[in-house]
Length: 165
Image (tube, rainbow, N blue to C red; front, side):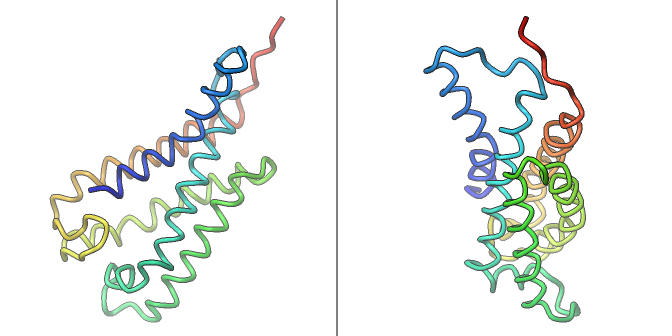
């Protein structure tokens, strides 16, 4: 149960830091999605870096999340971890944020079946050992991550910032 809480904290942390810095400096808080966009990308980047660490730290558990019939499971775990790390790092670089956010959305969708398989088979990693009931937590979390990615990192990239007159 702690993994979803950690993910939410990592996702929101850059925005909270930005708000705190704005308050301390006496500056206005982000007034539009365009002004919040960098913090949203940074939060998603931190979350993806956390996801990638799991592929190295919990490799055996990640392998168990994949069906036995899948070839090269260990290599696949490391490769997807490297992909998540690349996405996470790219979300900190303004010129790569939009592409990285789009890739993040694809990854969140494509990797979700592994979470379903793990929950249905009670894999002992990150809450999946709870069985199918874990999907009641993981499903909404996945939707939140997708919504964050789409609305705050992809759609907000096209919104023009408000100009102070």
